[in-house]
Length: 329
Image (cartoon, rainbow, N blue to C red; front, side, top):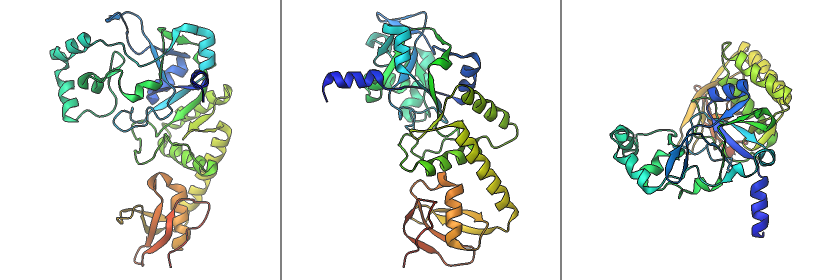
């Protein structure tokens, strides 16, 4: 591919802006995406701000660099360029100079943060004026590979934000992200991925107190024809709601039925989870467990053991809940 084609592809690719769940609802309520901090020019911090995006869908899904339980917006880059032109820039999130970095390191107010970075105690993502504090401490500002996919908009605020949104990205919920699930990968089985996504939504919005927030989000998305994005796949709100109602209905029916206890093995070392299923057939129980708790088995289910019974090992890791597992001979 020619360099011109690569540049064109980069300019046409969708952009992503990841944030917390609370910020998602605030942004949608105000219909405005605001700059997160001051900009930098000529080696000095300036008034005003920047709004940061990335072309890398997996950008916020790396443990240690991610916002735990992040959500995100997929944004139409072409519309941004039509509206703002040269105000949309490619490149890293920072113009920090070495003197600026050294001054920050020498400031006693930053001593605790620096100590946590050096000891490895700092969890999640923390930025200072557009740069990750780990890069400030290590001196890798602008050098890390993750900045290569960054874009930034040189404005204080982006009003009428709904005009640019093409998807709401879900990556594990607020503060409950399961890092055993690779949220950045592209799902192969679309239907199985939908079941997994819906199960995660049900688990996240798991109380009457949370349901109005869930319903308000879905209502906004339907009104604006914006789909959910999960593992790089789009799912319309209507399809998500229909599958959600089906799963909840089935769970209620299963809950009223007699339950049987099982140990479902999720790795070759024999580790697993104790759970129950509404059937005394271990093979069908494995199918029910995988279908309803897919996030617990990122590498598949290796065996199942009924309470008081013998372990049944599977011929290969069981990953497709639309089929029954095959017991090893």
